[in-house]
Length: 316
Image (cartoon, rainbow, N blue to C red; front, side, top):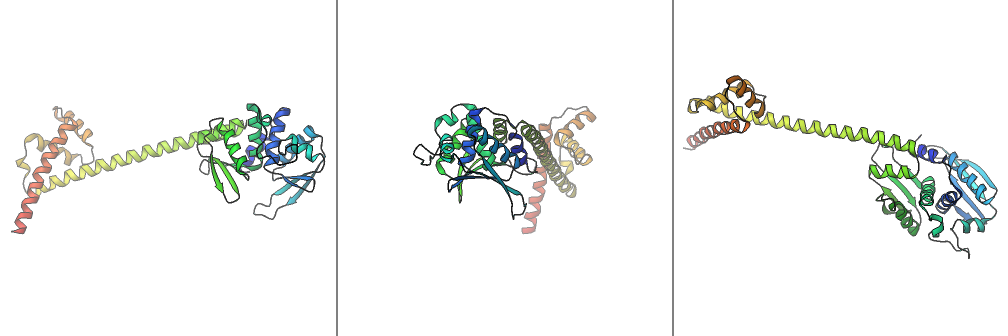
């Protein structure tokens, strides 16, 4: 069962007031219905949604509903539930603010449909039940979307979402418009808005795990980068020491710099900080990381003089 199906099953069990039923039905019928030959046909692959919408229609409008199931010839071969309403069509569509009194289709519902926060939540819930999906945070990127056919309805739904600071974005698609959320925190807020609290707990658990895993990976990458830098620095210092050894140049260094040279060869994998602590501990002469770095610059400068002299000799 997909994460989206789990969410829809959960919110299909939510008990709501009469006005919320009207708002939810308004969104579901507007964004799902096929209206033809004095009948309304609603479709869904989810049995729980079919039961909820059918029950709401009967409770709010006392209409008879014919329910059919069709086996889909698709990859998943899910059954498709068809809810057909054949009576009180004009009254139903006008009451849901889908048609006006002259039976002309409204682009967006009247204000009373979404007059309070609970009705707005219900309208958004109706949109999600028929046109929404959310990726499972465990297996994919964070993404919630609603697919809306009509442009003004899409803008209307986007505005409703953004009344709750969800930062919903709108994109044009070949067959309509996609309203989407990408931020994990906003998707979690949307689930709370839908009252899908079980889904919120699952989503947050996975989000915390992923965030912690990403943080650990970043720390590991940072530590690896630091280790690589330490090894590279130490190898360069040893390279310059070898040049001095090959050219019998170590005696040209002062005693403290020779001491740093000896400890570098003795502890080739130590960082400058670690090496300064080792020298301070073993010799009793405190040396800072900065001071040690200064001694290795002397080693490099002397080594580079031997290298330049060799190049000059070759060219003569």
